[in-house]
Length: 191
Image (cartoon, rainbow, N blue to C red; front, side):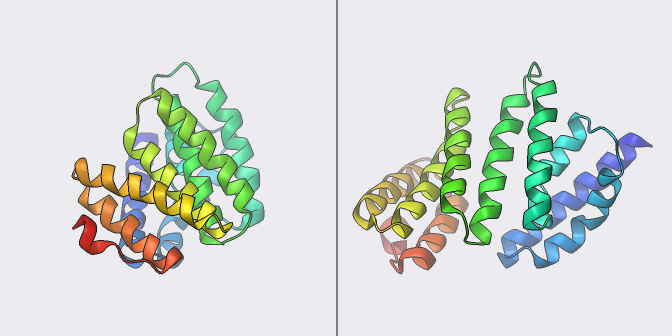
């Protein structure tokens, strides 16, 4: 039964992620993962599979709840620190939490802190895509703080590497985000 619940929850999380990618907002995604959280919230203890699910539905929570859940996640991740994949989970928790902060446009210092945590852990694993995504979002923070020249240089490096790696979807996504943040359109340069 537990395995079946996990597979059902995993399919809902994947569906919600796909909906978010298409719509670029969390409204409908939250509705899809609501039953996942209702089941997990009742548990006294979270196991590794639960952590995988919760890490990928952080956006479903309000600001106060997410802070509590995030702190609880870190405690549980520490229990699994000897698992080979625990570092990846650590990377994702910090990255996804930073993305939640980004969607509400508050606490850029907190967002920066969690992006840097994710970035450092991603460097240890040579997780290049996460490194690039972190660097991109840190450049957005630089831009919003008024360091426009430095931010522009950084995103140009990130876009160049995405292009070299032929990560077309990520490149297009970040180019679109950058246009929203900065008003600059670079599609011709990297297409």
